[in-house]
Length: 112
Image 1: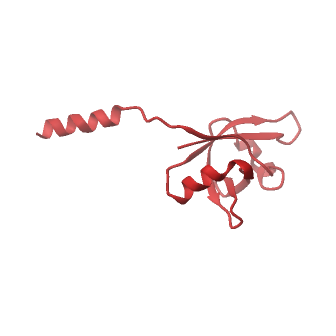
Image 2: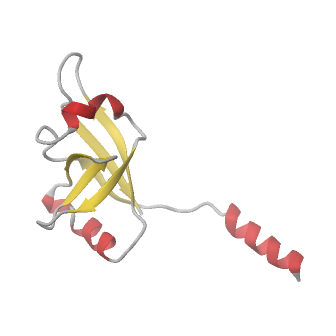
């Protein structure tokens, strides 16, 4: 019985987890917050944290630095998932910058 139980547990661990993309696009307001201070830390694949703000918007943070907001027209699904306690991950998918100029655009990908 013990061997069957461990075999079943190993089978579930080996199954790939299917994640679906909830949002993929650029953040708003990146020049208004802390991005000019920490832009050199952001590259593709860096994990970000999403937090609900008091004005019903969703902000993206790198550590404790606010980077920007998810566009208001696209944040309803993400907001509903955060309110219901779903596990949502956010990563930087693309950073658009030119040499010696501030970051032009920061695109993220949110999966659940």
